Amino acid sequence: MPTQTKIKAFDLRELKVSCGSCSLSHLCLPHGLNSKELETLDESIQHKPSVEKGQALFHAGESLKSVHAIRSGSFKTVVLTNSGSEQITGFYLPGELIGLDGLGESKHRCTAVALESSTTCALDLDDLEKLCCSLGGLRRQFLHLIGHEINHDHEILLALGQMKGEERLAAFLLSLSRRLEMRGFSPIDFHLSMPRHDIANYLGLAVETLSRMFSRMQEEQIIHTNRRHVRILNMAALCTLAQAEPRSLDTRQG
Image 1: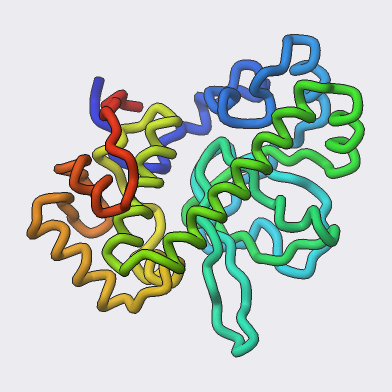
Image 2: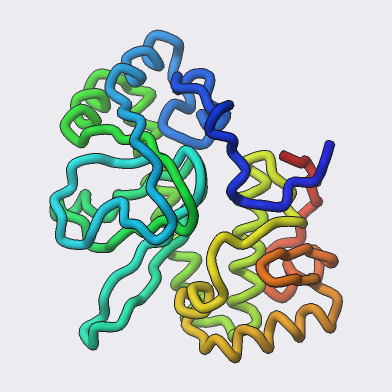
């Protein structure tokens, strides 16, 4: 099968409306639901129009109305620091939930911005609460996804607090590789939907420092880069640099 090179690779004409037939169902809220439960969930899902690159899905301070599952494209979440500068807090890919930040105080703590033309499935918060009460499978999966989000946050805190700059970049690329692989994409050959200055902001690095790190990793033949295109040449070395367990490489292509 041909190698998939971009994160944004879902053809909207081929995406199914039904949760049961969606190619992302194994990663999203429908996972583990039976056919009857899927029908009940489908009735509450709203398919939102495309959010164009640079546009916001929701803004910090807005009341939480819906939890969104990304159907296509990708988003970043941004908060404003006390000094008024932007801090990127996360990047989100198809199949992942976005908007969970608002569950604590019923309002969003961050702004979600599309990195490319993107679409989402929205589930009204009141409907979600009712469905979680009546559908045990949905409640378990929702809690599982929240737990996964918390674990990911812990990993990022560890990387930013304990790792050196190049180790942070390696951990970021490895995380992205694994998330893409779960979606059926190539884990070694992909396109970054986020610009380098966003990656630098997220990892707490200067853009110039990040560029030098990309160049050094390329010189060491760990990766090859061409603008936003990345190809991992030595997965074992990347894992070592990221302080992660070595992994057997699954080269499934999307």
